[in-house]
Amino acid sequence: MKILIVEDDFAARKMLKDILSPYADCDIVVDGEEAIQAFRLAWEEKSPYDLICLDIMMPNTDGYEALTQIRNMEKDITGIKGSNEVKIIVITALDDPKTVVRLYKAGATSYVVKPIDKNEFFKEIRGLGFMRE
Image (cartoon, rainbow, N blue to C red; front, side):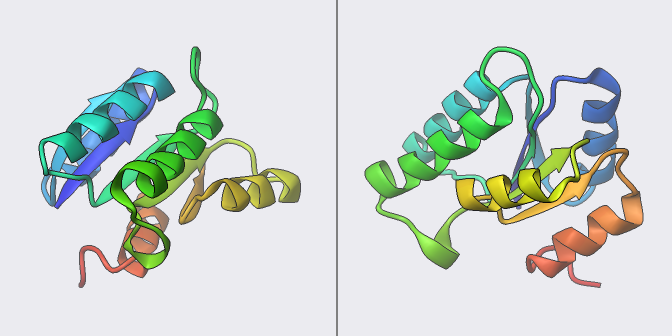
């Protein structure tokens, strides 16, 4: 399995890497612009990501913009849509209904609220069909 971790906070980035790296190859980027570039490069190299863990509130290009552009690239460049899309778990400190609706409309597969609870995080990942018990 191949995972892209998109997180600007060092501590959160390290925690996600520590949690996920025993189960998958993890690439790490620090903002939305790098996420878009990494996603495109992975497709060009014919080694796409299975899962993207995407923070929303980041400098430069934020997670909403990255999410939207990644979904658009899937449709435009790869022709992929629906259940064949890369799974994207959005990681956010915002848990209000308006934000959640906006995330799903933008193309999020799932979301996890910060601070991340390791057990809940694994539950979300398993719910997407990864890391079976």
